[in-house]
Amino acid sequence: MTTTDKGDYRAQLILGMAYLQKDFKDDAKSVHYFKLAADQGDVDAMYFLGRAYLDGKGVPQNTTIGESYLTKASEAGSIAALRELGNRHADFYRESNSSVEALKAIQYYEKAFLLGEGSAALMISSTYGSGSISDKYSAAVWNAVFQLTKTSQKTTDAFQLLPVAQRDKAMMDSYALYSKYSSLKPAKSFLDEVRKYRKHVE
Image (cartoon, rainbow, N blue to C red; front, side):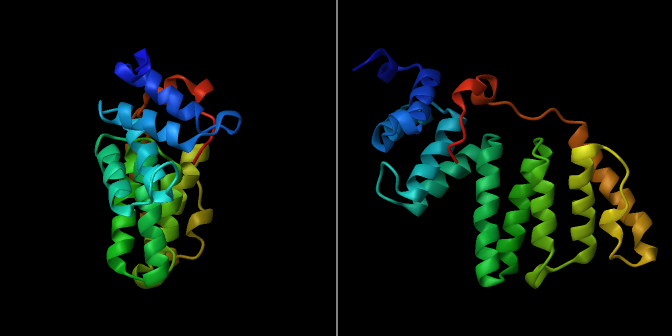
């Protein structure tokens, strides 16, 4: 057993990431190190381990276990896990048109948004844009919020399809939501601090 196997969860996490890269690709080894780090409570490792189980890479595919790891990571503040869970429920919503799935997706996206994930506002807008929970007002407000996260500038484009009587209120609501976002510092994980190890593997 190596020193890495014995305990440094950050080293385990970096090794797990390394084995996901093209030049060192080995899904089984990647999962091995993610599991070691996840067992010590590392949030990033929980996320990647959850993805491995969902995709069946390095381990037999198991949706229940995969979602369990993603849920643990999301509860610990992982933006990536919140976004992934939101995407999964949004996909289920598109397939089933179930309002329950839509609201679950929005719940995860909102949590990610409040942790500093600006793109989650666009996902919320998109979810409100069609299907059983279609709501033009909410879709417009969240679209405006997304635009604010990009420019911080006043915008009226998002409200053009709303009745004139609703536009002022929609703008106020969008600014109220944006103020929550802008007043918080984005959550940082260990991998955010060592970006050179974080080549895109999602």
